[in-house]
Amino acid sequence: MRLVASNPDAMGDMILRQPLYAALAGAGHELLLIVRSNTIPVARLVAPAARLLEFPVDPYTMTAGKHVIRLEWLVRQVRAFQPDLLLLASYQWTVAEEQLAAALSDVPVAGMTGHLCPGTGPASGIRFTRQVEVSRELHELEKNRRLCEMLLDRPVGWERPRVTVTDEQRQRARSVLARYGLGPDGFWVAAVGESPRSRLSLLRSWGEQRWAEVLGHAVRAHGWRFALLGLPEEQEASRRIRAALGPAAASAVVVDEPGHDFDLLAGATALCRGYLGRDTGPMHLAAALDKPVIAVFGGGHWPRFTPVATSARVLTLGVPCQDCAWDCPFAESYCIKEVPVDAVTTAIDEIAASSAGGVRLEVLPSSAELVGRMVRELRALHVSESERLLLQLQEKEAALHRVAEIAEGYRRTVAERDQQLQEVDHQLQRLLRLTRYPRAIARAFRTVARILSPGGKRAS
Image 1 (cartoon, rainbow, N blue to C red):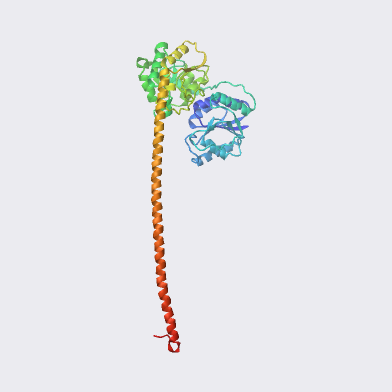
Image 2: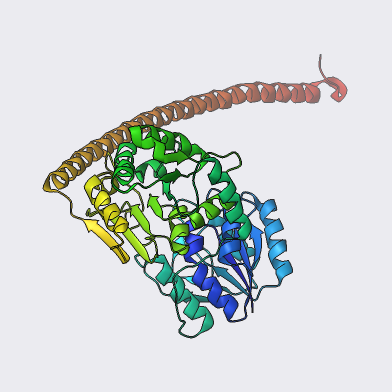
């Protein structure tokens, strides 16, 4: 069967889908994957036998009805593949996929019992031919397993995500890292910077000072060295973290190589000893390359995207608002900002002592002081929101009152105009009567005079 699978999401989601595509390819299905431009290199590792097609628009930022011409190009490319099935691989789908499914209305559609991405358009109009029942809280790897079993109509042997980098990627990383004084298996990859332009990145950030403390501990206690990797917009934060290390900064480098790309990231991760950092795509890449992972998580999607590794320590703070999809009402994202530094340094010590086999997801307890602070914030937020809603209501009532006054003014004006028109009509009728009767009398006099005149002639 020829399957076309839509993948609108980022690196981590793609890596967690690797067992799904491996199983489909192993069952003899031919795959065409539609991916975003920045995940094409990842998709080559995840599904090396699949054909790849790039979304001509950002599927998450487009709105319904826009970019129709560019999507027509995508539809033509998909039709040329002659698909037997359109697979929406994500739990939540986008407007671009809505329009793709509508344009391919003669192609069966399969997916999960998810939903349209919030805020991207009206209610979904996709008519699924087959859907597998999954709950939102399930880990993405388990969602993919159930989706795979539905597609293959049988139970599947399920493994964790695995990828293999190319020799070219290893060689590129080896030559670049050598210029920074780093050799194979002599450093850890750290993704610790955040983008100041992204609210989500700032919400998911643990904080520069905390990262500096744990990196410094790893350097001083265990002699670890670090390659700080990240997107270009994250590198300034990485430089500040490195500077905050003080003397330990000599054991950390910010890799800001011109042309920084996925090949360098993949090769460097394959050559490193492990990963330390945030919940990122590089974290999932490290796990898929059998590297130990130490990660500080927030609660926005906990625990749906935790790394599937052979060795991992993943820490977050237990808060009542976990799994909020990062719709955070608080002044700070406490679920990650309040993860204590000593919990992370303990995880580093365990990994360094080689006593950390297996994966441990730690939900650390919140302090009574923090819970009280959150309650006070929510109460203040509730009061503030109530006051805001009351003010809005008052403003709407005032606006309605003004509209009513204007309407009453128009009503009075119309009534006065009607009265004036009636008076004008009355005067017109009076004038018509006054002009009609004198003319009639004149005609009568002229007729009588003509009759009475000698010979029937009109009298003078």
